[in-house]
Image 1 (cartoon, one colour):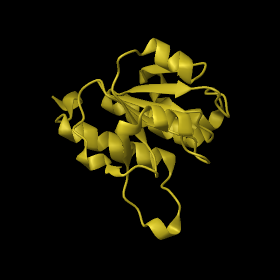
Image 2 (spheres, one colour):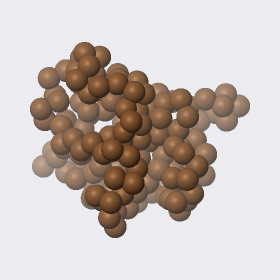
Image 3 (cartoon, one colour):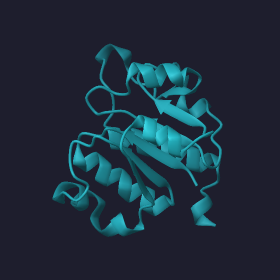
Image 4 (cartoon, helix red, strand yellow):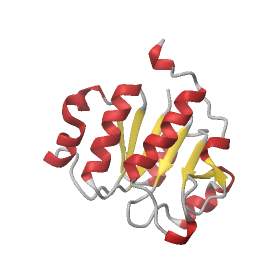
Length: 154
C-alpha cells in the first residue's frame, strides 16, 4: 500500500480531494499538523464526499511525530525545486510521497534531510508557478500505482 503525506495543508478542498483518491486506490493518507482547517469542516467533507470512512487516515502533531511513528521508510518529497522527475523513480509498495503547503511547499530542512529523494513534475520554468496540490498528488500517485500494476484492481 502506498502512502500520501500532506505537510501542513492549507486548503480544505485539496485534502478532501486527495482523501477521495486515497479511498478509491487503497492508499494511506498522512496529514502533518498544524492543519489550516479542521478535517471535520464542510469543505473537506464535501470534497471527499462520503469516502472519508474508507480513508486509512493518520494524523501527526508535527514532522518529528511523523518521523518517530514511521521509522525506516522510503520518503519521496515532491517539490518544484527537485531535479529528478517523478516518472524516473522506481516506486515500491509502502513508499511514502510527501507534498508541502500550498503556498510555500516543503521546508528547506525537510528537503535537505531527504535530498536524495526530491522529485518534481516537469513544468514550464518561466512561470515560476506550480500545479494544484491535489492534482500534483494524483499525478505522482497514479504513476506509482501504474508501476505497481494497480494492486487494488486485482
